[in-house]
Length: 327
Ligand SMILES: *[C@@H]1O[C@H](CO)[C@@H](O)[C@H](O)[C@H]1NC(C)=O
Ligand SMILES: *[C@@H]1O[C@H](CO)[C@@H](O)[C@H](O)[C@H]1NC(C)=O
Image (cartoon, helix red, strand yellow):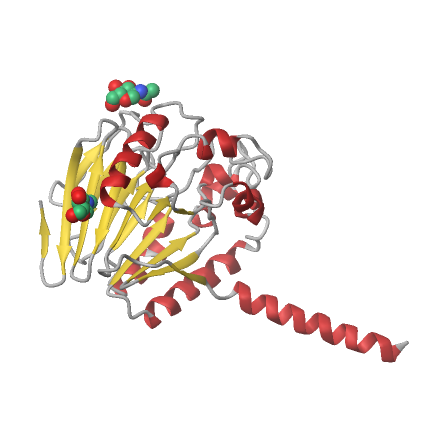
């Protein structure tokens, strides 16, 4: 019996080691850029409400702008399905709030999504499941991953586990499968992000997470990210931190680094009317309503534009290789 048992034990140890290696490294993916090396994408957040609260109008304008820009992909900053994520992979909300809403030809590109806190209130694993890709192959959602596209690297980071209050509040249930023990999860994620950033040779480094680092809106700053993630971004000269969570469009610049803080959380319900004051030198733009962000990246330039539901450009900003300029 002992002769049969030992290889099994060895195999289990070996497999555990393999899994540990996979978990400890951020998965990375490649997305082809245009023939001139440029890249363009749209960013929308906080959207899944079966078309209500202007979600359909945002989707319509995304389709038009997406066509004009010939976007390569779409980024979702999370809170993909309200109020409580998906029940399971067969939840009709997937079609009702995603497939049947973003119908424009230009939006039939890869959607790269992260999870928001509302997604964790449902079955978080459902959104991460390949079964959803079978239903609609533009869907792609992981907790944290890296996207390489030409000279740009986009780091998608799972920010919900950072926020202390989700672990103490009793009002909502969160699906922490795969996250606990929390301390290890966060420590591993920060370590992996730092290693990947240090190894990165990308010209432009962009972060996407659901939660704000800085925001003048309803939720305000996320202190846990200010304390734990921000120093890593500053030290490694990240260009943009893009989030949702606050249901507005917002651009805050930093006085002591090149990092720009961009909120694109206007995918559906907005107009909360509770904006806090902010240093006007840093607050480049604030819109308490629905819309989305568009981004062009070339070898020497990043250009951003925020759009409302009528297709108006509300704010633009650009940075080039040598100078930082705003418009
Ligand atoms: C839809 O958008 C219009 C124009 O911005 C706004 O006046 C209206 O309040 C929005 N509706 C909802 C439900 O948010
Ligand atoms: C990106 O470039 C295209 C083509 O030049 C332009 O139509 C579009 O307005 C630009 N978008 C942004 C966000 O700068």
